[in-house]
Image (cartoon, rainbow, N blue to C red):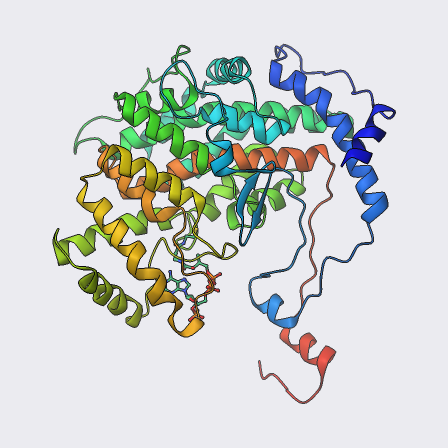
Amino acid sequence: MDHIAAHNQSSKVAMPPTKLGNTTPNTLHQRMSEIVPNRLSDIRIIRTKYGKGNLGNVTVDMAYGGMRGIVGLIWEVSLLDPEKGITLRTHSLPELLPRLPRGRRGSEPMPEGMLWLLLTGEVPTKEEALGLSAELAKRGVVEPWIEDVLDQCPKTLHPMTQLSYAVNACQHSSKFAKAYASGVPKDTYWQYYFEDCLDLIAKLPLIAARIYRNVTRAEGAPPVGRGLSVDVSLDWSGNFARMMGFESDEFDDMLRLFLTIHCDHEGGNVSAHTCHVVSSALADPYLSFAACMNGLAGPLHGLANQECLLFIVKMREELGDNASNDQVEAYVRAIIKSGQVIPGYGHAVLRKTDPRYTCQKEWAEMHLPDDPLLKLVGQLFEVVPRVLAEGGKVKNPWPNVDAASGVLLNHYGLKETNYYTVLFGVSRALGVLSGTLWARICGLPIERPKSLTSEEVVRLFGPEVSPKM
Ligand SMILES: CC(C)(COP(=O)(O)OP(=O)(O)OC[C@H]1O[C@@H](n2cnc3c(N)ncnc32)[C@H](O)[C@@H]1OP(=O)(O)O)[C@@H](O)C(=O)NCCC(=O)NCCS
């Protein structure tokens, strides 16, 4: 995009002054304010030059088939290539992970660095990431009545339902909703959106940790109550771990890795797309993200990591610790024959092993080589792709992100599988809120694809079939 960069030198657009009342400007906000005008200028040029470019034909099968293969969205922060895997702002995960800054503690990247990258397109310096960490810690406050509402939830209410409930409730403090109602100019929307996104990301560890503590409390024990708060000396992930009640440095590092790699996966998956479409109606980030979490809670999407560990644990119960690959294969075949899927395998877009699986497996091999569940993860990798590939029905027989994550969490004592999707959701906030904020920066309009009825399909293509409905 050199021509675009050159054009930028002569076409800087002055940003409107921030009108955010008492909010202290932060370094990320400053950097965004510098980047946004240039990027908007790039996009104007892209649209002028390529606006009439054809992105492909849409067939009736695609419309019935979950819109697979239809390109109809702009998602600035990440891209999924079926063969090359995920790129986050043009960086592949294996290339990016060593480059992201580490914090004052631990050896894994800080998720704050990933957030900076997704929002700005730039790998931050350690100082920038630490500054963002401090900014998030300062913003990490939840209104006490929301804490009380969470404490009132029955222990048996699914943690994802509680998360969605609490995020919706936080909408009470939306700066964007307030600014919109007061009639601020359109080109300043993103600034209020930015504020809400950062506030929401900062609140999530508090909310999610409270949910964890409440759902895991002993029978008859009281809920968390007042007093759970962010420690400003810890990073975002460290705070989350500590508030959940985990103390070990190794757990902290595992969680940093988990939260960093689960953040984003292009814009068309259920959770990202839901956030995008809800936000396109100018619903604020809280409403948009709560909707996104409801999508993530579906068993074919984010709930798969819970299903995956349960699958491996059950297989171990049935086959024991010394199962041969032949026994694992017979087990897998029986599951498929009974009409169930093998959790952790397959993908709607990827056509190779998910790099997020690979880096978690490598972590596990380094830190928990003797875990019996890890041995089964390895055996499944040897068996499942070959079995799924038979018959050619499954488009991607390779493991996805969920095939190894549960084993890591379980190893460190986080054994409540119905909580796993909450961890995924906290990480996903970094990606979906970044992508959605960029949609607001670009001023993308309300989303409204056209739908058809089956009768209309027949009318369009021929009278020989007459649906009886
Ligand atoms: C991820 C997933 C939902 C993608 O779905 P998709 O895009 O429709 O996948 P495909 O086009 O390859 O599906 C074609 C067929 O293969 C089957 N298939 C796909 N993955 C399978 C798996 N892991 N085990 C068994 N069968 C599988 C599908 O159920 C479908 O069968 P059908 O035609 O009888 O309905 C699917 O692979 C799946 O259910 N995987 C297991 C759950 C999981 O790990 N989800 C997390 C995703 S990150």
